[in-house]
Length: 372
Image (cartoon, rainbow, N blue to C red):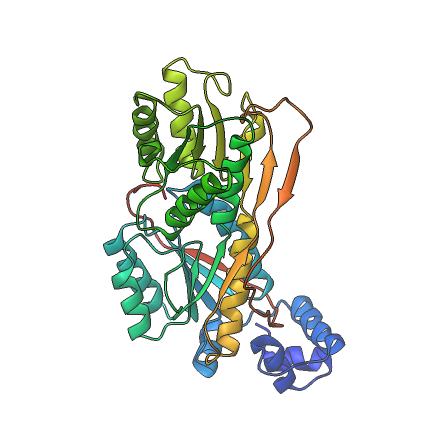
């Protein structure tokens, strides 16, 4: 089995230089780094990651806790995380907390006990225990998608929520809808609160009053959205248009409308937060807010690696822009698809980080839990 010394001889460099290339402990000239990588490839050299972690006190691994099994939205985020960890030479360990606070705390502890260098976590609606654990053990952590209110103790990466939701409401109001309902997400999630705030600000911008009867909570799940949509349709003065606050709830709302023989947009106009791959295959095609899911995952990795490189810098929040995708479920005539992007805010500086290669590992998943 080839050794580090064999790689050094083949590349014409010192063993120390090979070590710097492997561990990222010192900048190495690009052509020298490439010579080392070529020698490793030619000799079939495989780094001893266990020995390397003992020397550096780093495992070059990242833990990811998101509900990727129960929520398809997080699957795209996972793709972004995976690609970026690979690009920077880190392993990825994955656990699904199923948005259950007790299970969330357990899986994060399991990831921490595997000695990951840092964590990326999409917190549940009740993250108190989770945050206390992370703070107590001083675990480098990025909160993903859902932010925690107040001065951040952890770095956070999320999408814009309020402005894009407001845009859906003003678009429907511009089509002469005066009774616009909202199927809102699970209370306690920052995404739910921000999208509700955006709904209210959109009503204000359109000169429409806020009517709490027009807000029904679908708890971020398809089944919950079925119940919420049914409740809105049962009102004495039901909505003529509907905004659904995530992709799972869009499916639930459409199922209820179908079961009642109602058409979109003939009987009810519909706009949704979250675009998904088959949204333009529905009839009618869905007008939606598209989140930059893969980029959110990639950005979370970059922010975490920047934190590992500078542990004492102040925590900050990155918000990435969403895109308004104009199709026809809102009641507009069928036209070529148009999109409009919202602006970013509060961007963190990005760091130049090391690149090598990566492996990926997954924890065994527990039984399926609720969507988010």
